[in-house]
Image 1 (cartoon, rainbow, N blue to C red):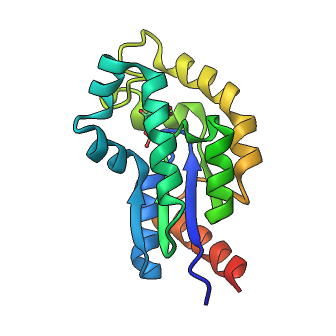
Image 2: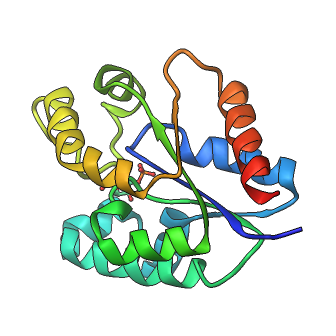
Length: 174
Ligand code: S3P
């Protein structure tokens, strides 16, 4: 049986990490969250790194981490919401496994993460919902192009999302 990876992409607050962790448990795979790997490498929080070094420096570290994660097999990889902005990341993720895009409406995303202080792209903005809409408008084509499958998470329990993702992944693996 192939141990090609299962990759989760999508905007902040679409459930990549929680769904990814559950999928990994069910598959007996390791779970890797690119944001966690990045924080291990930079030695501080992503929010702090954004404040000190800026987004461009963050994207560089993210790119290195993704290329390293993509070299291993038997993993579920959850990526940060902006990972698809770099074509290099998309190529590496598509080459390493089956890419699932989790989606949600701007309103649902706002309810889930609109007040998060951990998300530097939303923290401190006067109108987080508007910011989410703007970022989504730019990113949606990148997400769609990168994905083998899309799962709309609105109105679904986390377990139901996991079932859909795993059913598609198992079919792909056969
Ligand atoms: C980002 C999403 C975050 C994190 C960073 C940038 C983005 O990850 O990588 O704050 O550009 O959308 P999550 O999608 O896990 O929140």
